[in-house]
Amino acid sequence: MNIISCENLTKTYGSAAAPVHALQDVSLTFEQGSFTAITGKSGSGKSTLLHLLSGLDRPTSGEVIYQGKNLFSYNDNQLSVLRRRRFGFVFQSYNLVRELTAQENILLPVMLDGRKPDEAHIGHLIELLGIEDRLSHLPGAMSGGQQQRVCIARALSNKPAILFADEPTGNLDGKTGREVLSLMRTVGKELGITLIMVTHDLGVAEQAERVIRLEDGQVAEDSGAVSI
Ligand SMILES: Nc1ncnc2c1ncn2[C@@H]1O[C@H](COP(=O)(O)OP(=O)(O)OP(=O)(O)O)[C@@H](O)[C@H]1O
Ligand SMILES: [Mg+2]
Image (cartoon, rainbow, N blue to C red; front, top):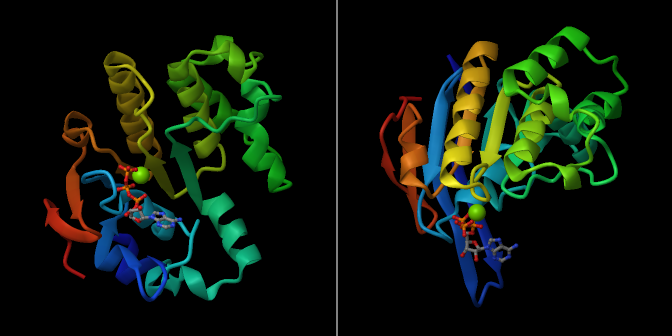
């Protein structure tokens, strides 16, 4: 079953006289529960594609269809609620709130939604990610790998349908990066989450079920194209 797709997605930056075609006419479909890596050289449009698919940014033209509806037909407020409830994000730069403990960071998306945390789910995430003994620490007192595991727990605290990750292992050493990636895969599979991850590391991409390579804002290769 398809969970999210995009049609003729295009993003152009700059002026009409000097346009930068960050993404050109990209159409893709993602299967529910699948793990896809998006690769390509620096500037090929990976982050742009991820930001558009996840509704963090709006395209110049084209659509992103989630649950049968174009994301960009929602207003900003509706879109941010949908993003908070259905999508999780992990970035290269951790993005934890410095003043909050690991536990408070993990609970933040649920609190922002004004909901009661699902203690069993969050406890399970904390256990799967091995961060039980870091819960009262501030981000500054944690290693990069620990901070990234807290980010993954935070991204999954609302039980999202899709986890988007932009270079999640980019700031970690090789061994820690592989551990974090493997945790993301395990947790993703266990919870049935669709994982869409940007990486320029081919070793990391190899772990995915499908690899899409971008070149100059277009799909140059797709190992697992799904017919629409
Ligand atoms: N806000 C912006 N304003 C102008 N140009 C932009 C903006 N964001 C991205 N671009 C341009 O769009 C193109 C694609 O950028 P993007 O960030 O998607 O690349 P990327 O593949 O993620 O690169 P990297 O591996 O370095 O993160 C690049 O040419 C970039 O310079
Ligand atoms: Mg990028």
